[in-house]
Image 1 (cartoon, rainbow, N blue to C red):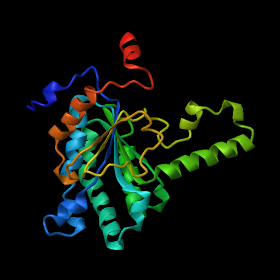
Image 2 (image 1 turned 60 degrees about the vertical axis):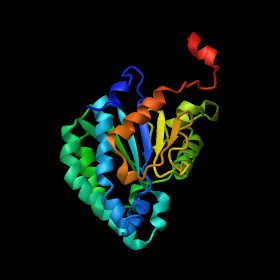
Image 3 (image 1 turned 45 degrees about the vertical axis):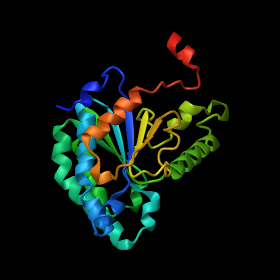
Length: 249
C-alpha cells in the first residue's frame, strides 16, 4: 500500500490529467544507449500513469504520445516510435479493455502509417463501450494546428450560414476542438525538468495547475503520480477570483 496514495483526498480529484512524457532520450544517454532504447523502456512508465489514474478514479488521462513536430526527428527514431506504438497497442489492448477504460485518439491521424492507424482504430472500437475511465492518446498532435483547424471549420460554417458570428463564444469554439467531448485539463505534468508546454493542449490548459518534474519519463512511478495529485490538492484554484471569494463559495 502506498503511503503517498493514502494522503489523497478522494473528494478533490482532478477530472482530467495530461502528461508530457519527456526525457526518454536523456535517460538512454545516461546509460550509454541510443535514444530509441529510452523509448522502449518508457512503457512501464505509461502503465504506471494509467494504473495510478485507474486506482484513484481519475476519469480522463491524456498522454502526449507523438507531437506534430516529432515528425522532424531522425527517420530511424520516427520508425522505431511508430513500430513501438503498434507493438504496445497489440500488447496492452486487452489490459486497457479489462480495466474498463475507453481509448480515444486526437491529432492529425492522416499522417500516421496505415498499420498504426488500423491498430489505433481497433483499440478505439474494442473499448468504445467502456465507462471506467478515458485514456486519450495525443498522436501527431499539435495544439496550434488544432486551433487553426477549429478556426477554419467555424469560418466555413459562418460562410454557409450555419453559425452566426455573434454566437461565437468559448463554449462554441470548444465544440470544434479535438477535445470537444472531454473536460478541460485540471493538471498538466511534464517530466524531464523542462519548463515549457511544447504546443500541447494550449486552449485546454488555460486554468490547469502545471507541474514540472525533475524526473526522466522512464523513471516515472505510481508514487510520483500520487505525489503530483497531493501537490495539486494543496493548491487553491481561484479562476481569477480572490482567495476570500473562493472560501465564501
